[in-house]
Amino acid sequence: MVRTLGVAVVGFGWMGRVHTQAYVRLPHHFPQLTVRPELIAVADEVPGRAEEAAERYGFATAARDWHEIAADPRIRAVSVAAPNFLHREIGTAMARAGKHIWIEKPVGLTADDARAVAAAVAEAGVQGAVGFNYRNAPAVQTARAMIAAGEIGTVTHARIRLFSDYAAHPEAALTWRYERARGGSGVLGDLASHGVDLARFLLGEIDALIADTAVFVPERARPAGATAGHTRATGGEPGPVENEDYVSCLLRFASGARGVLEACRVSVGEQNTYGFEIHGTKGAVHWDFRRMGELGVSRGTAYQDQPVSTVYVGPGHGEYGAFQPGAANSMGYDDLKVIEAYHFLRSIAEGTAHGATLDDAVRSATVLDAMARSAERGAWVSPA
Ligand SMILES: NC(=O)c1ccc[n+]([C@@H]2O[C@H](COP(=O)([O-])OP(=O)(O)OC[C@H]3O[C@@H](n4cnc5c(N)ncnc54)[C@H](O)[C@@H]3O)[C@@H](O)[C@H]2O)c1
Image 1 (tube, protein in one colour):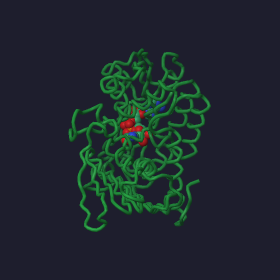
Image 2 (cartoon, helix red, strand yellow):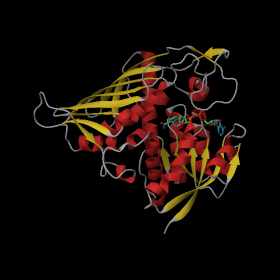
Image 3 (cartoon, helix red, strand yellow):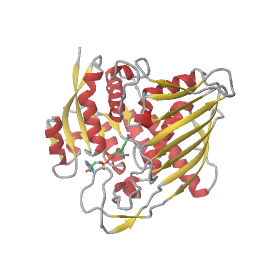
Image 4 (tube, rainbow, N blue to C red):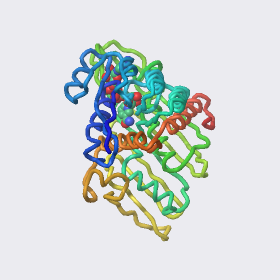
C-alpha cells in the first residue's frame, strides 16, 4: 500500500529547486516506492521567493521563517538547502522535531557542525540523507563494483579532480560562499567535499594527507540585493574573499593506495570538470562527469599495451534502468538528485539507511578539516 509523506524544502535557490523537482519526479521513476512525497511547505528568507516556488511547484504553504516548518505536524521530511552556516541550526532543529532530513553537503561549516547534525539525527531516530550526488551516477556505481570485485587488481593510485569556472569571473558576486562566517571553507566544502566522498566511496577511508591551498581572486564585488546561485555584481563595492579558491592534496588510503585530489573554483576553461582515474595492478577505470554515462575501463592480463574500452552504462548499471530503456541514452545532473531522493524515501519506508548518510558527511568533513589543518601547518596530518 502506498502512503503519502509530507515534505518541505528550506532554502529555494538552486538546490531547493532541484530537490523539489526530484520529489515531483520520484513516482515517475520509482513507482515501487511505498511512500510518496506530498509538497506541504517551502521556506525562503527572500521576500516572495517561497510564494513563487509554491505557485510553480504546488507546495500547499509558503513561509519566510523555517521555524514554521519545524512546528508543522503535517511535515515528516525536510530538505535543508539553505547556505552552509544554517545547516547545523536547521538540521538539528528539524531532527529534534522528529523530521527526517535530506541535507545538502558539506553539512555545516566544519566537521563539528556535521557531527552535531549527525548526533541529532541519531538521537531522534530519524533518517538523514546527504547531497553527495556524484556517487549516484550509474558509471560511478559500476566503477565501485568493478574495483570491489578486483577487476583492476589491487588499487595502487588514483587522481580525483573537480575544476570549475563558477567563480572565475572577476565580477562574480561576493556571496555567502566567499565568507568564513556563512560559507565556512571555500572550494574545500564546495567541491572537494564531493571529491572526498567519491574517494571514500570508491577506495575506502583516508589515513593521512598533506594539502596546499590558495586564493587566486582576493577581492570581489558585494551584491546589491538577494542572490541565488553564482550571480554577478558588476560595479559593486569590493570586499575580501575569506576562503580558498584552490586545493591540491596528496592522500594515503588505509588500503595503502595513494591518491591526488585537486579542486578549483576559478579555473577558466573548465566547466564541471569532475572525475577520477583509478589505477590497479591489472587495470584502470576512469570517469568524467561531463560524459556521465561512459566509463573508461582497462582490464585483462596484458599489463603493458592493454587497451582501454568505453562502457556505456545501461539498464543493470546502478539505477540507470529507472531512467532509460537502453544503454547510451544520456542522463543528467538532476537525475542524480532523483536517485538521491529515492534513497532518502526508501530509507524512511524501510527504516534502514540507503545512499549517503550523515556518517558519510562527518567523515568527509573530517577529511576536509584535516586538509585545512595540513595547509596551515605545511605537514602531513591524519583525519581525526
Ligand atoms: N550537491 C550539490 O551538487 C550542490 C550544488 C550546489 C550547492 N549545494 C549546496 O546546497 C546548499 C545551497 O546552495 P545553493 O547553490 O542552492 O545556494 P543558493 O544561494 O542558490 O540558495 C540558497 C537559498 O537559501 C535561502 N536562504 C538563506 N537564508 C535562509 C533562511 N534563513 N531561511 C530560509 N532560506 C534561506 C536563500 O535566500 C537562497 O534562496 C549549500 O549548502 C551548497 O553547498 C550542493
